Length: 402
Image (cartoon, rainbow, N blue to C red; front, side, top):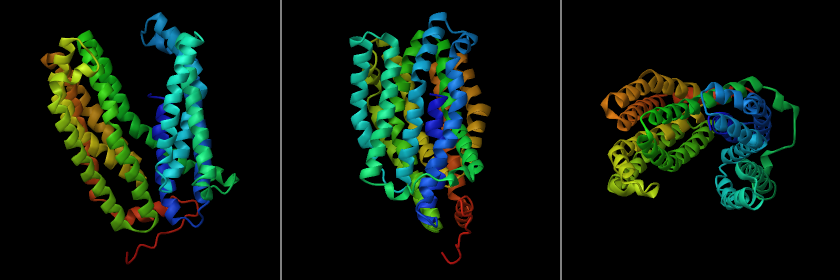
């Protein structure tokens, strides 16, 4: 999750930034196809160190103090998954290429097909073919490549192909700008993901009961996170499109609308979680002690949803503006200089698991409102100019009088 998947989720934010503005403001619609090709090249190179890490994961796991059977089997799992991880990255690239054109639904259609296929392949490889543990990464890898090829078929024969224009050596130009934005996107997304992994490790040190409750909470939160994540995707594409259309007022309105909508949806999720707090843990675990601890911590998790929504939507707007570095800096300061140390200190000084989530709440509210302030008070005319400077042709935006 914190290596290859970060390239797919974070590295492809460079497409959000460059392609959405290029689609509405570029001199040629084929500029979008060039950006997609550039993404394939750059992110494939980004995948090389991940591949090396996965190939030699066994010694890494042992160095981190993992038991021998975990180090051995974990390394084998990653080695089998290695080809499939690249399929996931390419799928995300192509999905972002379509989203920059305002084509949002195909990715969902494809996943509705490949998700049950993935479940069937897992059962087939693990149980029918008796491959055991290694059947899971093989099935998952095949499913990712199937997702990519199905999306490619949709693009070729249904919608989105008109921006392709064929392979071109131009994809090797301006590659430094793309790589820089992609790397910052990885850091922007990674700083939050890594913080949650640190919380998971800390929860494990609190004992098996806290770890079980944390597993319930994090599983649910990963599902709930799809709401702000989806808003962030739409915000980045919409803001980028409007900047490319030389419409700074519309881009500002879209960013603020996404922020307000995310807080409204976060409030609804908060209400549902608080209304079901005493039974929520039973979705995942029948142990009464785990259910009770989950209920004790859930108010903090519920409060977290508003800030998480704001972070998702404003983070998307920042990606549409090409300001991933701002989001990364805010995350680094909020999580690693304040909230994580505070949460861990509280956890081991009487607060237990709730202390960790108090720290997470503080971090997300700092991040969410800081990013919203940055977005709301941005010089949007300047952002239009920056969007055009990032394009391959280096056109200057004509924003006067907009």
